[in-house]
Length: 214
Length: 264
Image 1 (cartoon, helix red, strand yellow):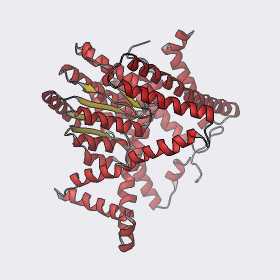
Image 2 (cartoon, helix red, strand yellow; image 1 turned 30 degrees about the vertical axis):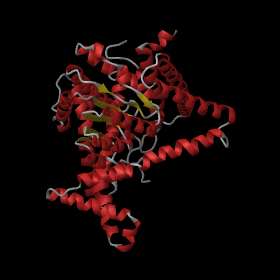
Image 3 (cartoon, helix red, strand yellow; image 1 turned 60 degrees about the vertical axis):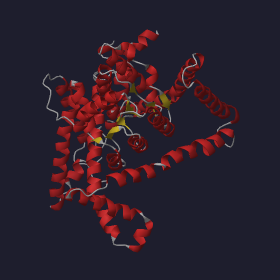
Image 4 (cartoon, chains in turn orange, yellow; image 1 turned 90 degrees about the vertical axis):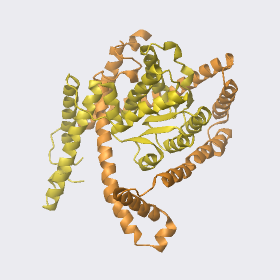
């Protein structure tokens, strides 16, 4: 039975049927089809949530191998598994809200993530300081535009030079936005074309198949 | 919402034009995928830099770090994997150690497996299957901001000669690129995130901006399906530009025909 579901043709059929069930009701609204589409979305969301179980299982297997064979860095794998177990068990046993799980999430995981994100500002400053050189008229123009937008973002500058707002908003709402929209259009088309490649079986790596593999 | 220009009984109002454009896109893609003739794609400068950067690492006896992003199987990841395959091929041929940090998102559990196969195949094709080491493709974390320090840690410990970031890297890209610069590694990146693209360009020695990355992926793989993507995107970009210009003209003449045509 499992080999039947692993075959490429069965997986492609499921893919095409799922696509049609979501695609068609968007253009042709019809009660039963809308209901089916909604059900399929729910099934997809539930299935997606279950992938985390597979991920945890894979991590335990991989780390277990590291620890058993005493490979380089095996101690860190004990640490990783211990934290994984503490987070999982505290969530299941003590509940998600108001208990140890919430404390671990809000007092440890979120602040650590925020620190990494906050460090971005320093990295951007150092990269900017290295790269912002007016070596040509074009580079000088770019530098000037960047400088105006940066000054506008700082609240104190806006208070002292209120005229800067008009220039900064013009730069971001015309040049910045037009480039950003062209980028979005292009990426969206690329994503749709990738979908066509997947539906026609030209892109099968996401199903776990290699080239020419059945 | 303006009234849609065309409506058909049974169809959702304002979605007919979208459907027709999609059908045209499907038809064009399938047609181009079947064509043996490959379109001309200009070589992206950052691609030449990849070869030089790997060569530099080989001469210095340092490893190469190459990642393919933190997303699932999306537009950017497919291109990133093509570039990873190219880097793995050069590394295998020149017997240079390749480190591929993986993770950063929950979907990378799936993409990682494809990347492992890709790199293993590159080493096998180069006649050096024994030099492939899966431990050089560590899974760092399913969380973006746990993946970042893991990646940065690899850069600090291994001091690579080249750091190549492809696929979909988001805010973590700046931390990684600057740290790569700090350890004197040639940094080649691909920007797919408009919010940090300018800063990433400052931090990198070479950058593939926006669509240059998928174009580079198509150029390297010579895959008709990827080439078809580039051709269809170009055609649709011209359609978009034409519609925008036409819209500008007719709006100035007081007509809302383009608004109604594209109304959803």
